[in-house]
Image 1 (cartoon, rainbow, N blue to C red):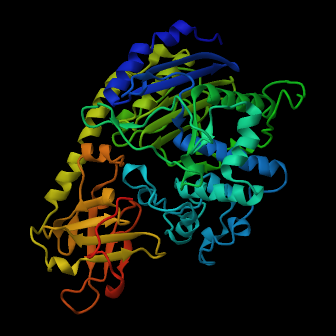
Image 2 (image 1 turned 90 degrees about the vertical axis):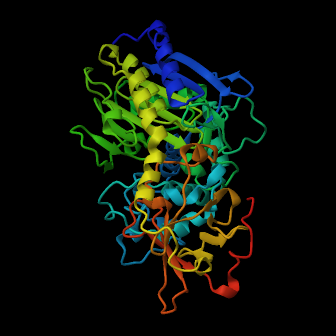
Length: 552
Protein backbone atom coordinates (compact mmCIF):
# COMPACT_ATOMS: atom_id res chain seq x y z
CA UNK A 1 0.00 0.00 0.00
CA UNK A 2 1.34 3.41 -0.97
CA UNK A 3 2.13 5.77 1.90
CA UNK A 4 -0.11 8.84 2.22
CA UNK A 5 1.59 12.01 1.07
CA UNK A 6 2.44 14.92 3.35
CA UNK A 7 -0.25 16.88 1.54
CA UNK A 8 -2.89 14.42 2.78
CA UNK A 9 -1.93 15.00 6.41
CA UNK A 10 -1.54 18.73 5.85
CA UNK A 11 -5.11 18.82 4.56
CA UNK A 12 -6.27 17.71 8.02
CA UNK A 13 -4.93 20.84 9.72
CA UNK A 14 -8.19 22.78 9.67
CA UNK A 15 -10.09 19.79 11.09
CA UNK A 16 -7.52 19.26 13.84
CA UNK A 17 -7.57 22.95 14.77
CA UNK A 18 -11.38 22.98 14.86
CA UNK A 19 -11.56 19.86 17.04
CA UNK A 20 -9.01 21.43 19.39
CA UNK A 21 -10.91 24.73 19.59
CA UNK A 22 -14.24 23.06 20.33
CA UNK A 23 -12.79 20.61 22.83
CA UNK A 24 -10.67 23.05 24.82
CA UNK A 25 -7.26 21.70 23.76
CA UNK A 26 -4.52 24.39 23.66
CA UNK A 27 -1.74 22.31 22.08
CA UNK A 28 -1.31 19.17 19.99
CA UNK A 29 1.73 17.26 18.75
CA UNK A 30 1.40 14.33 16.35
CA UNK A 31 3.65 11.83 14.63
CA UNK A 32 3.09 9.14 11.99
CA UNK A 33 5.10 6.07 11.00
CA UNK A 34 4.51 4.09 7.80
CA UNK A 35 6.47 0.98 6.84
CA UNK A 36 8.94 1.72 9.61
CA UNK A 37 9.64 5.28 8.45
CA UNK A 38 8.58 8.55 10.07
CA UNK A 39 6.51 10.16 7.33
CA UNK A 40 4.82 13.02 9.18
CA UNK A 41 5.24 15.16 12.27
CA UNK A 42 3.23 18.26 13.06
CA UNK A 43 2.14 20.42 15.95
CA UNK A 44 -0.72 22.83 16.57
CA UNK A 45 -1.42 25.49 19.16
CA UNK A 46 0.59 26.27 22.26
CA UNK A 47 2.44 24.27 24.87
CA UNK A 48 2.43 27.43 26.99
CA UNK A 49 -0.58 29.65 26.35
CA UNK A 50 0.48 32.45 28.69
CA UNK A 51 3.87 32.86 27.00
CA UNK A 52 2.50 32.00 23.55
CA UNK A 53 5.10 29.26 23.08
CA UNK A 54 4.01 26.93 20.27
CA UNK A 55 4.15 23.16 20.49
CA UNK A 56 6.72 21.27 18.45
CA UNK A 57 7.96 17.71 18.01
CA UNK A 58 10.19 18.00 21.08
CA UNK A 59 7.58 19.43 23.47
CA UNK A 60 7.24 17.08 26.45
CA UNK A 61 3.84 15.95 27.72
CA UNK A 62 2.78 13.79 30.66
CA UNK A 63 1.90 10.51 28.94
CA UNK A 64 -0.70 9.22 31.40
CA UNK A 65 -1.40 5.57 30.72
CA UNK A 66 0.92 5.40 27.72
CA UNK A 67 3.38 4.91 30.59
CA UNK A 68 2.03 1.37 31.06
CA UNK A 69 3.86 0.21 27.92
CA UNK A 70 7.13 1.37 29.46
CA UNK A 71 6.37 -0.48 32.70
CA UNK A 72 5.48 -3.70 30.90
CA UNK A 73 8.61 -3.41 28.73
CA UNK A 74 10.83 -3.02 31.80
CA UNK A 75 9.25 -6.12 33.33
CA UNK A 76 9.87 -7.94 30.05
CA UNK A 77 13.58 -7.11 30.38
CA UNK A 78 13.60 -8.88 33.75
CA UNK A 79 11.73 -11.86 32.30
CA UNK A 80 14.23 -12.13 29.43
CA UNK A 81 17.05 -12.29 31.97
CA UNK A 82 15.36 -15.04 33.98
CA UNK A 83 14.95 -12.82 37.04
CA UNK A 84 11.15 -12.82 36.81
CA UNK A 85 8.34 -14.92 35.34
CA UNK A 86 5.00 -13.57 34.15
CA UNK A 87 3.34 -16.24 36.31
CA UNK A 88 5.20 -15.39 39.53
CA UNK A 89 2.77 -14.67 42.40
CA UNK A 90 2.95 -11.08 43.59
CA UNK A 91 3.15 -12.26 47.21
CA UNK A 92 6.34 -14.17 46.37
CA UNK A 93 8.06 -10.94 45.36
CA UNK A 94 6.31 -8.51 47.70
CA UNK A 95 5.32 -10.47 50.85
CA UNK A 96 3.45 -7.42 52.12
CA UNK A 97 0.73 -8.25 49.58
CA UNK A 98 -1.56 -10.16 51.91
CA UNK A 99 -5.18 -10.69 50.99
CA UNK A 100 -7.34 -13.25 52.76
CA UNK A 101 -5.96 -16.70 51.79
CA UNK A 102 -9.54 -17.76 51.05
CA UNK A 103 -9.73 -14.97 48.49
CA UNK A 104 -8.65 -16.20 45.06
CA UNK A 105 -7.09 -12.80 44.34
CA UNK A 106 -4.42 -13.69 46.93
CA UNK A 107 -2.93 -15.75 44.07
CA UNK A 108 -2.51 -12.68 41.85
CA UNK A 109 0.45 -12.95 39.47
CA UNK A 110 2.52 -10.39 37.59
CA UNK A 111 0.53 -11.22 34.45
CA UNK A 112 -2.79 -10.71 36.25
CA UNK A 113 -1.74 -7.21 37.28
CA UNK A 114 -0.52 -6.36 33.79
CA UNK A 115 -3.75 -7.32 32.00
CA UNK A 116 -6.16 -6.06 34.69
CA UNK A 117 -7.37 -9.56 35.53
CA UNK A 118 -7.49 -9.32 39.33
CA UNK A 119 -11.13 -8.26 39.49
CA UNK A 120 -10.21 -5.87 42.32
CA UNK A 121 -12.05 -2.57 42.54
CA UNK A 122 -10.08 0.31 41.01
CA UNK A 123 -10.53 2.98 43.73
CA UNK A 124 -9.29 5.49 41.14
CA UNK A 125 -11.38 8.31 42.56
CA UNK A 126 -9.70 8.07 45.96
CA UNK A 127 -6.04 8.76 45.30
CA UNK A 128 -5.93 12.06 43.38
CA UNK A 129 -7.08 15.29 44.99
CA UNK A 130 -7.43 18.88 43.87
CA UNK A 131 -4.53 20.60 42.10
CA UNK A 132 -3.25 17.20 40.91
CA UNK A 133 -1.95 16.35 44.39
CA UNK A 134 -1.97 12.62 45.25
CA UNK A 135 -3.84 12.05 48.50
CA UNK A 136 -1.93 8.83 49.20
CA UNK A 137 1.76 7.92 49.16
CA UNK A 138 3.30 5.35 46.83
CA UNK A 139 3.83 2.93 49.74
CA UNK A 140 0.05 2.96 50.30
CA UNK A 141 -0.52 1.08 47.04
CA UNK A 142 -0.03 -2.39 48.53
CA UNK A 143 -2.30 -1.48 51.45
CA UNK A 144 -4.99 -0.49 48.97
CA UNK A 145 -4.67 -3.72 46.97
CA UNK A 146 -4.83 -5.66 50.23
CA UNK A 147 -8.19 -4.26 51.29
CA UNK A 148 -10.16 -3.17 48.22
CA UNK A 149 -13.24 -5.31 47.55
CA UNK A 150 -13.57 -7.79 44.73
CA UNK A 151 -15.56 -6.04 41.99
CA UNK A 152 -15.56 -9.02 39.63
CA UNK A 153 -14.48 -12.66 40.08
CA UNK A 154 -10.72 -13.19 40.03
CA UNK A 155 -9.65 -13.72 36.40
CA UNK A 156 -13.31 -13.52 35.46
CA UNK A 157 -13.55 -10.08 33.86
CA UNK A 158 -11.70 -6.90 32.93
CA UNK A 159 -11.39 -4.29 35.71
CA UNK A 160 -8.92 -1.51 34.89
CA UNK A 161 -6.68 -0.86 37.87
CA UNK A 162 -3.98 1.81 38.12
CA UNK A 163 -2.90 0.61 41.57
CA UNK A 164 -1.83 -2.63 39.88
CA UNK A 165 0.70 -0.75 37.75
CA UNK A 166 1.93 1.29 40.70
CA UNK A 167 2.67 -2.00 42.47
CA UNK A 168 4.38 -3.36 39.35
CA UNK A 169 6.73 -0.40 39.69
CA UNK A 170 7.58 -1.69 43.17
CA UNK A 171 8.28 -5.12 41.65
CA UNK A 172 10.71 -3.56 39.16
CA UNK A 173 12.53 -1.74 41.93
CA UNK A 174 12.65 -4.81 44.20
CA UNK A 175 14.10 -7.14 41.55
CA UNK A 176 16.36 -4.67 39.73
CA UNK A 177 17.72 -3.02 42.84
CA UNK A 178 17.31 0.34 41.10
CA UNK A 179 14.71 3.05 41.22
CA UNK A 180 12.07 2.92 38.50
CA UNK A 181 13.53 6.09 37.00
CA UNK A 182 17.10 4.74 36.92
CA UNK A 183 16.05 1.37 35.47
CA UNK A 184 13.95 3.09 32.81
CA UNK A 185 16.88 5.24 31.77
CA UNK A 186 19.39 2.38 31.82
CA UNK A 187 17.31 -0.18 29.93
CA UNK A 188 15.26 1.89 27.48
CA UNK A 189 15.89 5.61 27.26
CA UNK A 190 19.68 5.66 26.99
CA UNK A 191 20.04 2.66 24.62
CA UNK A 192 17.31 3.98 22.30
CA UNK A 193 18.57 7.56 22.41
CA UNK A 194 15.36 8.98 23.89
CA UNK A 195 16.89 12.16 25.29
CA UNK A 196 13.68 14.03 26.06
CA UNK A 197 11.89 11.29 27.98
CA UNK A 198 11.99 11.07 31.76
CA UNK A 199 10.08 9.76 34.75
CA UNK A 200 8.08 12.32 36.79
CA UNK A 201 10.95 14.81 37.22
CA UNK A 202 14.03 15.43 35.04
CA UNK A 203 17.46 15.41 36.68
CA UNK A 204 17.83 18.98 35.46
CA UNK A 205 15.31 21.56 34.34
CA UNK A 206 13.78 20.52 31.04
CA UNK A 207 12.81 23.23 28.58
CA UNK A 208 9.89 23.08 26.17
CA UNK A 209 7.45 21.35 28.51
CA UNK A 210 3.79 21.44 27.53
CA UNK A 211 1.97 23.12 30.42
CA UNK A 212 -1.26 21.48 31.67
CA UNK A 213 -4.69 23.03 31.12
CA UNK A 214 -8.32 22.26 31.86
CA UNK A 215 -11.12 23.87 29.86
CA UNK A 216 -14.12 25.47 31.58
CA UNK A 217 -17.50 25.31 29.86
CA UNK A 218 -16.48 27.95 27.29
CA UNK A 219 -13.49 25.77 26.22
CA UNK A 220 -10.93 28.48 27.02
CA UNK A 221 -7.58 27.28 28.46
CA UNK A 222 -7.22 27.45 32.25
CA UNK A 223 -3.75 26.66 33.59
CA UNK A 224 -3.72 23.99 36.30
CA UNK A 225 -1.09 22.44 38.55
CA UNK A 226 1.14 19.77 36.99
CA UNK A 227 0.46 16.08 37.57
CA UNK A 228 2.58 13.27 39.03
CA UNK A 229 5.71 15.15 39.99
CA UNK A 230 8.64 13.76 41.97
CA UNK A 231 10.52 10.47 41.82
CA UNK A 232 8.49 7.98 43.86
CA UNK A 233 5.17 9.78 43.43
CA UNK A 234 2.10 7.55 43.62
CA UNK A 235 0.99 6.24 40.19
CA UNK A 236 4.24 7.15 38.49
CA UNK A 237 4.60 3.65 36.93
CA UNK A 238 0.96 3.85 35.84
CA UNK A 239 1.05 7.29 34.25
CA UNK A 240 4.04 9.46 35.16
CA UNK A 241 6.46 9.18 32.24
CA UNK A 242 6.99 12.42 30.27
CA UNK A 243 7.98 12.33 26.62
CA UNK A 244 7.65 14.01 23.25
CA UNK A 245 6.53 12.90 19.79
CA UNK A 246 10.06 12.60 18.40
CA UNK A 247 11.13 10.27 21.23
CA UNK A 248 7.96 8.18 21.18
CA UNK A 249 8.38 7.57 17.47
CA UNK A 250 11.78 6.05 18.27
CA UNK A 251 10.26 3.75 20.90
CA UNK A 252 7.28 2.69 18.81
CA UNK A 253 9.43 2.14 15.73
CA UNK A 254 11.69 -0.12 17.80
CA UNK A 255 8.64 -2.13 18.88
CA UNK A 256 7.36 -2.39 15.31
CA UNK A 257 10.79 -3.44 14.10
CA UNK A 258 10.97 -6.12 16.80
CA UNK A 259 7.47 -7.29 15.98
CA UNK A 260 8.39 -7.77 12.33
CA UNK A 261 11.12 -10.14 13.46
CA UNK A 262 9.61 -11.79 16.54
CA UNK A 263 6.20 -12.38 14.98
CA UNK A 264 7.98 -13.44 11.78
CA UNK A 265 6.46 -10.86 9.50
CA UNK A 266 9.87 -10.14 8.04
CA UNK A 267 13.07 -12.00 7.20
CA UNK A 268 15.57 -9.74 8.88
CA UNK A 269 19.11 -10.91 9.49
CA UNK A 270 20.52 -11.13 12.98
CA UNK A 271 21.50 -7.70 14.19
CA UNK A 272 24.42 -6.45 16.16
CA UNK A 273 23.85 -4.83 19.59
CA UNK A 274 24.55 -1.45 17.99
CA UNK A 275 21.71 -1.99 15.50
CA UNK A 276 19.34 -3.43 18.10
CA UNK A 277 20.25 -1.81 21.43
CA UNK A 278 17.19 -3.21 23.25
CA UNK A 279 15.84 -6.75 22.99
CA UNK A 280 12.05 -7.12 22.80
CA UNK A 281 11.92 -10.93 22.68
CA UNK A 282 8.89 -10.99 25.02
CA UNK A 283 6.84 -8.82 22.67
CA UNK A 284 4.58 -11.68 21.45
CA UNK A 285 3.60 -12.33 25.08
CA UNK A 286 3.08 -8.64 25.80
CA UNK A 287 0.87 -8.20 22.74
CA UNK A 288 -1.23 -11.31 23.34
CA UNK A 289 -4.85 -10.57 24.27
CA UNK A 290 -4.98 -12.01 27.79
CA UNK A 291 -8.20 -10.37 28.92
CA UNK A 292 -11.34 -9.74 26.85
CA UNK A 293 -12.89 -6.30 27.29
CA UNK A 294 -16.63 -6.07 27.98
CA UNK A 295 -17.61 -4.24 24.80
CA UNK A 296 -20.49 -5.03 22.41
CA UNK A 297 -18.20 -5.67 19.44
CA UNK A 298 -17.97 -8.79 17.28
CA UNK A 299 -14.27 -8.31 16.57
CA UNK A 300 -11.45 -8.75 19.04
CA UNK A 301 -11.11 -6.14 21.77
CA UNK A 302 -8.73 -7.31 24.47
CA UNK A 303 -5.95 -6.24 26.84
CA UNK A 304 -2.39 -7.54 26.80
CA UNK A 305 0.48 -6.40 28.99
CA UNK A 306 0.30 -2.60 28.93
CA UNK A 307 -1.40 -2.53 25.53
CA UNK A 308 -4.87 -3.07 24.08
CA UNK A 309 -5.63 -5.12 20.97
CA UNK A 310 -8.50 -4.26 18.63
CA UNK A 311 -9.33 -5.69 15.25
CA UNK A 312 -10.46 -2.83 13.02
CA UNK A 313 -13.07 -1.60 12.35
CA UNK A 314 -13.40 -0.93 16.07
CA UNK A 315 -13.85 1.73 18.73
CA UNK A 316 -10.56 3.00 20.10
CA UNK A 317 -10.76 4.67 23.54
CA UNK A 318 -14.56 4.88 24.03
CA UNK A 319 -15.92 8.28 25.03
CA UNK A 320 -17.65 8.89 28.32
CA UNK A 321 -21.42 8.87 28.14
CA UNK A 322 -23.33 8.59 24.89
CA UNK A 323 -22.09 5.75 22.61
CA UNK A 324 -22.88 7.87 19.55
CA UNK A 325 -19.72 9.86 20.34
CA UNK A 326 -17.57 6.72 19.96
CA UNK A 327 -17.67 5.89 16.24
CA UNK A 328 -15.92 2.95 14.63
CA UNK A 329 -12.46 3.58 13.21
CA UNK A 330 -11.48 1.94 9.93
CA UNK A 331 -15.00 1.34 8.69
CA UNK A 332 -14.70 0.70 4.95
CA UNK A 333 -10.97 -0.12 5.05
CA UNK A 334 -9.41 -3.61 5.10
CA UNK A 335 -9.49 -5.12 8.59
CA UNK A 336 -6.25 -5.06 10.53
CA UNK A 337 -4.95 -5.50 14.07
CA UNK A 338 -4.36 -2.34 16.11
CA UNK A 339 -2.17 -2.34 19.22
CA UNK A 340 -3.01 0.81 21.12
CA UNK A 341 -3.46 2.71 24.37
CA UNK A 342 -4.69 6.08 25.54
CA UNK A 343 -3.85 8.20 28.56
CA UNK A 344 -5.83 10.63 30.71
CA UNK A 345 -4.57 12.72 33.62
CA UNK A 346 -5.81 16.23 34.49
CA UNK A 347 -3.93 18.47 32.08
CA UNK A 348 -3.13 15.87 29.42
CA UNK A 349 -4.68 13.36 27.02
CA UNK A 350 -2.60 11.05 24.85
CA UNK A 351 -3.05 8.29 22.26
CA UNK A 352 -0.77 5.79 20.54
CA UNK A 353 -1.85 3.26 17.90
CA UNK A 354 0.45 0.70 16.27
CA UNK A 355 -0.26 -1.61 13.32
CA UNK A 356 2.31 -4.45 13.52
CA UNK A 357 1.37 -6.02 10.18
CA UNK A 358 2.16 -2.87 8.21
CA UNK A 359 4.72 -1.27 10.57
CA UNK A 360 2.56 1.83 10.97
CA UNK A 361 1.91 4.01 14.01
CA UNK A 362 0.20 7.22 15.07
CA UNK A 363 0.90 9.16 18.26
CA UNK A 364 -1.11 12.15 19.50
CA UNK A 365 -0.17 14.22 22.57
CA UNK A 366 -2.33 17.05 23.95
CA UNK A 367 -2.05 19.30 27.00
CA UNK A 368 -5.63 19.35 28.31
CA UNK A 369 -8.15 16.94 29.76
CA UNK A 370 -10.70 18.13 27.26
CA UNK A 371 -14.46 18.63 27.51
CA UNK A 372 -14.88 15.48 25.45
CA UNK A 373 -12.80 12.91 23.60
CA UNK A 374 -11.25 15.62 21.44
CA UNK A 375 -7.74 14.16 21.45
CA UNK A 376 -9.16 10.78 20.50
CA UNK A 377 -11.00 12.40 17.57
CA UNK A 378 -7.72 13.90 16.36
CA UNK A 379 -6.14 10.47 16.64
CA UNK A 380 -8.97 8.88 14.64
CA UNK A 381 -8.76 11.43 11.82
CA UNK A 382 -5.04 10.81 11.40
CA UNK A 383 -5.57 7.05 11.52
CA UNK A 384 -8.15 7.23 8.75
CA UNK A 385 -5.68 9.19 6.61
CA UNK A 386 -2.96 6.62 7.27
CA UNK A 387 -5.39 3.85 6.28
CA UNK A 388 -6.27 5.73 3.07
CA UNK A 389 -9.84 5.83 4.32
CA UNK A 390 -10.74 9.53 4.36
CA UNK A 391 -13.66 8.88 2.01
CA UNK A 392 -15.36 7.10 4.92
CA UNK A 393 -14.25 9.39 7.73
CA UNK A 394 -16.80 10.62 10.27
CA UNK A 395 -17.56 14.29 10.81
CA UNK A 396 -15.26 14.59 13.81
CA UNK A 397 -15.67 18.36 14.10
CA UNK A 398 -19.42 17.87 14.59
CA UNK A 399 -18.77 15.06 17.06
CA UNK A 400 -16.42 17.37 18.96
CA UNK A 401 -18.98 20.18 19.04
CA UNK A 402 -21.87 18.01 20.20
CA UNK A 403 -19.89 16.03 22.76
CA UNK A 404 -18.20 19.14 24.18
CA UNK A 405 -21.61 20.68 24.77
CA UNK A 406 -22.71 17.66 26.75
CA UNK A 407 -19.40 17.57 28.60
CA UNK A 408 -19.84 21.15 29.75
CA UNK A 409 -23.33 20.32 31.04
CA UNK A 410 -22.42 17.09 32.84
CA UNK A 411 -22.03 18.67 36.27
CA UNK A 412 -25.25 20.65 35.88
CA UNK A 413 -27.10 17.38 35.32
CA UNK A 414 -25.53 15.83 38.41
CA UNK A 415 -26.41 18.88 40.50
CA UNK A 416 -30.03 18.71 39.36
CA UNK A 417 -30.09 15.02 40.28
CA UNK A 418 -28.84 15.83 43.78
CA UNK A 419 -31.24 18.72 44.31
CA UNK A 420 -34.18 16.67 43.06
CA UNK A 421 -33.22 13.89 45.47
CA UNK A 422 -33.36 16.08 48.58
CA UNK A 423 -35.97 15.09 51.13
CA UNK A 424 -34.85 17.48 53.88
CA UNK A 425 -33.78 21.09 54.01
CA UNK A 426 -32.74 20.90 57.68
CA UNK A 427 -30.51 18.22 59.23
CA UNK A 428 -32.11 15.54 61.38
CA UNK A 429 -29.60 16.08 64.22
CA UNK A 430 -27.58 18.99 65.62
CA UNK A 431 -24.69 19.75 63.25
CA UNK A 432 -22.10 19.07 65.96
CA UNK A 433 -23.26 15.44 65.94
CA UNK A 434 -21.56 14.95 62.58
CA UNK A 435 -18.31 16.75 63.36
CA UNK A 436 -15.32 14.42 63.51
CA UNK A 437 -12.53 12.64 61.70
CA UNK A 438 -13.48 9.45 59.88
CA UNK A 439 -10.94 6.83 58.74
CA UNK A 440 -11.08 4.02 56.22
CA UNK A 441 -10.34 0.41 57.19
CA UNK A 442 -6.58 0.61 56.68
CA UNK A 443 -6.22 4.04 58.30
CA UNK A 444 -4.52 5.68 55.32
CA UNK A 445 -7.37 7.95 54.24
CA UNK A 446 -9.48 10.20 56.44
CA UNK A 447 -12.39 12.56 56.00
CA UNK A 448 -12.74 15.57 58.27
CA UNK A 449 -16.21 16.95 58.92
CA UNK A 450 -16.26 20.27 60.71
CA UNK A 451 -17.98 23.64 61.05
CA UNK A 452 -16.64 26.86 59.62
CA UNK A 453 -16.61 30.28 61.26
CA UNK A 454 -20.26 30.82 60.35
CA UNK A 455 -21.33 27.47 61.75
CA UNK A 456 -21.84 25.74 58.39
CA UNK A 457 -20.90 22.11 57.96
CA UNK A 458 -18.03 21.24 55.62
CA UNK A 459 -16.13 18.17 54.47
CA UNK A 460 -12.35 18.13 54.07
CA UNK A 461 -10.69 15.16 52.39
CA UNK A 462 -7.36 14.35 54.05
CA UNK A 463 -7.60 17.71 55.79
CA UNK A 464 -6.52 19.64 52.67
CA UNK A 465 -7.89 23.14 52.17
CA UNK A 466 -8.19 22.71 48.36
CA UNK A 467 -10.23 19.56 49.05
CA UNK A 468 -12.61 21.24 51.48
CA UNK A 469 -16.23 21.78 50.41
CA UNK A 470 -19.48 22.98 51.96
CA UNK A 471 -22.07 20.34 52.85
CA UNK A 472 -25.76 20.68 52.01
CA UNK A 473 -28.48 18.69 53.77
CA UNK A 474 -29.68 15.88 51.51
CA UNK A 475 -31.77 13.24 53.30
CA UNK A 476 -31.89 11.73 56.80
CA UNK A 477 -28.32 11.78 58.12
CA UNK A 478 -26.90 12.49 54.68
CA UNK A 479 -25.35 15.54 53.04
CA UNK A 480 -23.86 16.37 49.67
CA UNK A 481 -20.99 18.52 48.49
CA UNK A 482 -20.66 19.80 44.97
CA UNK A 483 -18.57 21.63 42.36
CA UNK A 484 -19.62 23.26 39.12
CA UNK A 485 -17.77 22.18 35.98
CA UNK A 486 -15.73 25.39 35.96
CA UNK A 487 -14.82 25.03 39.64
CA UNK A 488 -13.72 21.44 39.04
CA UNK A 489 -11.64 22.50 36.03
CA UNK A 490 -9.75 25.15 38.00
CA UNK A 491 -8.98 22.57 40.71
CA UNK A 492 -7.83 19.97 38.15
CA UNK A 493 -10.52 17.58 39.33
CA UNK A 494 -12.25 14.95 37.21
CA UNK A 495 -15.93 15.72 36.75
CA UNK A 496 -17.06 12.36 35.40
CA UNK A 497 -18.29 10.76 38.62
CA UNK A 498 -21.98 10.22 39.26
CA UNK A 499 -24.18 11.81 41.90
CA UNK A 500 -23.37 9.21 44.58
CA UNK A 501 -19.77 10.42 44.60
CA UNK A 502 -20.89 13.68 46.21
CA UNK A 503 -23.06 12.17 48.96
CA UNK A 504 -21.96 11.35 52.52
CA UNK A 505 -24.27 9.09 54.53
CA UNK A 506 -23.75 9.17 58.30
CA UNK A 507 -24.58 6.35 60.70
CA UNK A 508 -25.40 6.00 64.38
CA UNK A 509 -25.08 2.45 65.69
CA UNK A 510 -25.74 3.40 69.31
CA UNK A 511 -28.99 4.25 70.95
CA UNK A 512 -27.92 7.81 71.68
CA UNK A 513 -29.79 10.23 69.46
CA UNK A 514 -26.97 12.65 68.73
CA UNK A 515 -24.02 10.23 68.45
CA UNK A 516 -22.66 9.54 64.96
CA UNK A 517 -19.90 6.93 64.73
CA UNK A 518 -19.35 6.38 60.99
CA UNK A 519 -20.09 7.56 57.49
CA UNK A 520 -20.43 5.87 54.12
CA UNK A 521 -19.01 7.28 50.91
CA UNK A 522 -19.58 5.70 47.49
CA UNK A 523 -16.49 7.20 45.90
CA UNK A 524 -16.13 4.15 43.62
CA UNK A 525 -19.10 3.36 41.32
CA UNK A 526 -18.59 -0.39 41.70
CA UNK A 527 -19.04 -0.30 45.49
CA UNK A 528 -22.35 -1.82 46.61
CA UNK A 529 -24.94 -0.01 48.69
CA UNK A 530 -23.83 3.27 50.21
CA UNK A 531 -20.15 2.65 49.49
CA UNK A 532 -17.08 2.41 51.70
CA UNK A 533 -17.31 2.67 55.49
CA UNK A 534 -15.26 5.35 57.28
CA UNK A 535 -15.31 5.06 61.07
CA UNK A 536 -15.14 8.01 63.38
CA UNK A 537 -12.06 8.43 65.52
CA UNK A 538 -12.64 8.54 69.31
CA UNK A 539 -13.44 12.02 70.56
CA UNK A 540 -10.23 12.44 72.58
CA UNK A 541 -8.18 11.88 69.41
CA UNK A 542 -10.44 13.85 67.11
CA UNK A 543 -9.13 17.14 65.79
CA UNK A 544 -11.55 17.76 62.95
CA UNK A 545 -13.64 20.27 64.86
CA UNK A 546 -10.60 22.03 66.25
CA UNK A 547 -8.25 22.47 63.30
CA UNK A 548 -8.54 24.30 60.05
CA UNK A 549 -7.92 22.43 56.83
CA UNK A 550 -4.28 22.55 55.79
CA UNK A 551 -2.86 24.20 52.70
CA UNK A 552 -1.05 21.02 51.65
